[in-house]
Image 1 (cartoon, helix red, strand yellow):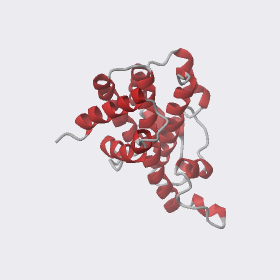
Image 2 (tube, helix red, strand yellow):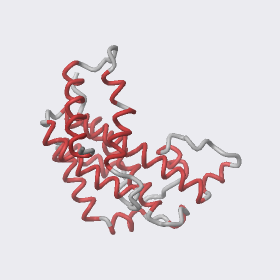
Image 3 (cartoon, helix red, strand yellow):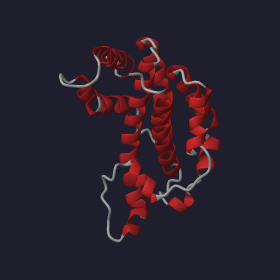
Image 4 (cartoon, helix red, strand yellow):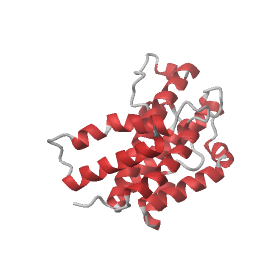
Length: 209
């Protein structure tokens, strides 16, 4: 049964929202949430964001209603970044301290941002590949587009080069691919073949010998 385009778009833009929030926090250099301005961060990266959105539309073949979901979710305009969202983006790996207010301490925020960047870039890559496969985008061309998009997103998440497309790809391969390709997976054979093909093509682009 085909995955509705709306669900594919929500998956892509939700993880992109995590990337943007984490990038806005990292860009402060203080990791104090009071210093965060999403709109200022995106204004400085307007050209990159435009290229990224164009790339998403091209490789996922989203129509206007699906692209509008990015605005609907609200991550690409000014909003408050909270510790609750950082905890969500980092899957709660830091734990929840007592008192809860300690989550807002800069060292803890910085750690959540590092974990969250890894997780959200990996989720973002999975969402992009899934959407490209559902849109029947040829693997070689799709992988080239996705690699470029992932490069922009990695730089948005952490311009210090801690995040990279190669790292996100390698994490994706161990976090998502085994469940898709295991013998008792519910994925159809055509889907498994497509994910294998994208893995091969992305490896050529992102981890050349």
